[in-house]
Length: 254
Image 1 (cartoon, helix red, strand yellow):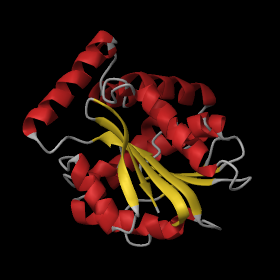
Image 2 (image 1 turned 30 degrees about the vertical axis):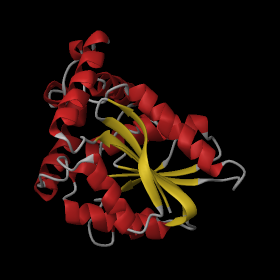
Image 3 (image 1 turned 90 degrees about the vertical axis):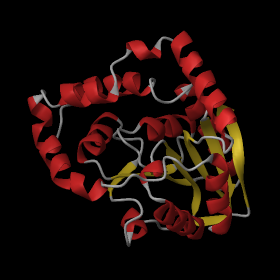
């Protein structure tokens, strides 16, 4: 199922463009996450250990590797196509793991040799249902060293309906000003990928696995509900440290 570097580069580049439609100020959010990991690990260890949850084609892992070249990054995802794109295009950024976050025993697949300094994620954990998300938060708290952090960038609405609508509007207007809706969307990217013969085997494997993903997930959980789950899962402190519209970066401290 190996891909050529040229093919991987082409599809990762297209992925980066289409994702701008969905993550408000996506690059700034990546930068904030890297700032947090840099800050929390500074002076503590020569080799910070970081896990990237739902890494996709390696977007966040690659940026973290550039910012923290001495870090050991473990990037985990369940999608065989996106993982292969990451392994090929960002081969040196991380050690990539094929596992389903939240399934029984998934943390064992990470092969960690010491406590984590940070666990990071962007727009990935919302596919978990509330119970599975709480359990996953609890498992991550157990993997982190004292003072370590979970950093999650995602779209997390406000509790109050009017404020939630205002946040959505602010994010949408910002995206329109940046003309990100001129890029292809999620469905178009996958439709185009299906026409590339080099991706055929990986897409077949993806379709084979697809039923296991079936869940409405926690996409409707509010920012305060996520913070509540994190605190109940064993994190001493949790809250949003950056927000644009409903795009947030939440930090939870072990």
